[in-house]
Length: 343
Image 1 (tube, rainbow, N blue to C red):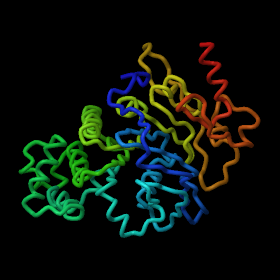
Image 2: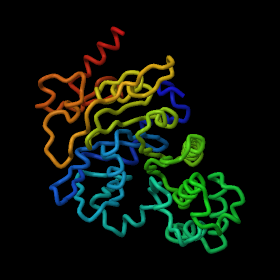
Image 3: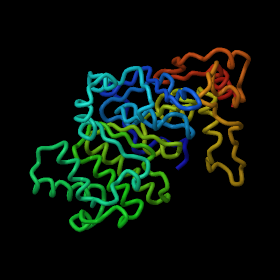
Image 4: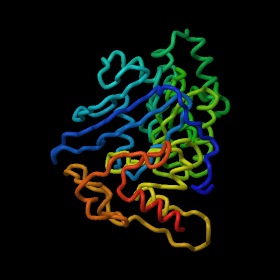
């Protein structure tokens, strides 16, 4: 599927009150080389049923943003801002309340199941741990629920598979088991951190279709972290593009892919194969992302930008509305629109 197509599994933008609202989130790590500002003023909003894609290069702050939502950060991290979940600020919530929310109301699918799953416990025992922590089911009911979850995520012979260990599963089955554990307590929000990393394209497609179907069937919202714009086109209704710890553009997937208004988003799209003609060279983005342990003046993308102008390196562009339900932080937004009109 071309990245210019409308996503098949997208959720419509809801006008309802957001269940999750991230406001001016900043995460800094104290290291031996100084302070690393991994997340620098991120705003996100998610209503029930929404599927939001969070995209950007490695090191742009996507995974740290997801971990900060549930305060799953290392001890040298400092998080500020607000993460409002159904009226409560998770950054200020007591640890006891966070333990109630993690897994029960907000669940996480981590990037690599072999490091997230316990290798010495069976899959059934790991699902049972979540059910014990977040439900009042008795042992027999938990066993039935575990079978239902494995069946829900497409693992055959669930009764037998409950006794299997992670190393006895293929990569795709381990990821499905991770999804089953995440869904055990029927959460309202799923944070999927690159859930198809290192899987072949066939299994990747199956996992993504499964996640979209489950969000629709179970009425969950989902944030999907990825660096793959094709994945976003297939699964998400909205997308936020991150660069150097900041959200630089956000809006509906079909709008941003067809009408990018940030030079970085435009460069990402141009670096992707579109299938329009054979043997067309790709257009790589020159240079490297900035170091986050050094102050960044102006627009962080300026050293790599083909639209750069004098003020870009001095003044950070405002994150402003460039079209209805479409915001971007780029001094070149008007020039991108004008180029499009002249194309």
